[in-house]
Image (cartoon, rainbow, N blue to C red; front, side):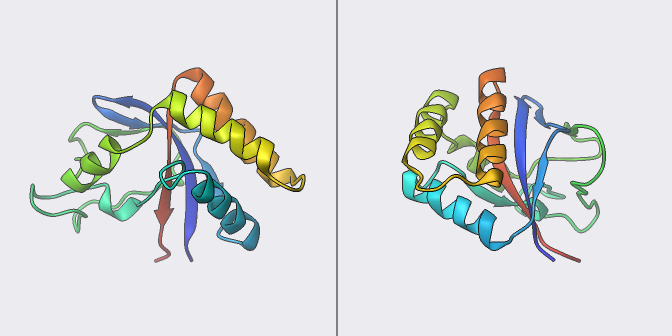
Length: 145
């Protein structure tokens, strides 16, 4: 089963993904939220496959030796022990919008949406809280095993 994780990036050097990541099941409500973000700006809520974050070798994205478990407690630190960040992930992270760009777009998206939706409110509030704290946000997709 596929699961999405709204994830704060606490640091880039080394990459640290925050423990407060939020699991979002791929239901119609979350898909609608993703589409709304995409209409606001195609890079507002960029998605990356979690399995491609890791690398065993410089040329390969993904690892057969180490598996990333986003359900584990605590921050995930990509400092080479045990997680080495892939070059694909590095390139993806370089394309993220700035926090200021994301915040302006997210606030506009919130104002433009048609109906009140409890989960939209939760996701937008958490996203804004992370941005205000100084964290960038990424959407990770974890494919079922």
